[in-house]
Amino acid sequence: MALFEYAINQKSPDISKPSPVMMDLFCRHFGLKPEDILLIGDNLETDIALGFNSNVKTLMVESGVHHRQDIERLNIHPDWVIGDLSEVSPEQLTTI
Image 1 (cartoon, helix red, strand yellow):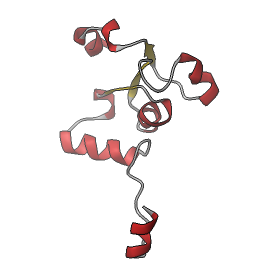
Image 2 (cartoon, rainbow, N blue to C red):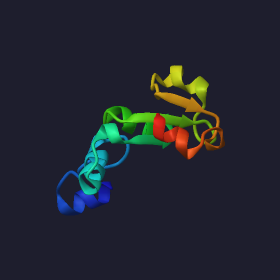
Image 3 (cartoon, rainbow, N blue to C red):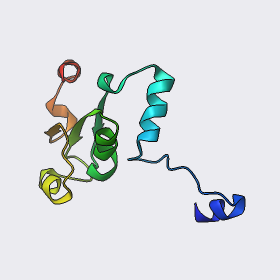
């Protein structure tokens, strides 16, 4: 990215997770509001932080990068935590 910024002599906008810019663009493109979304992710520092920064409900799955014990250490708190997606049905996800 630094090479690109040097070449154009500009600072690149931050559109990566956890910047809320990404979620704003997503919501506008699909005609959604943050309260319509449940963000499911395995990374507290990117996925779950994106949800928090965008006022979106979050569900962390422990089948990837982070686990429950990382929540307090990183001080990033998802709304819900499950071991993996097999613990919930699609119907249950719509009620969250």
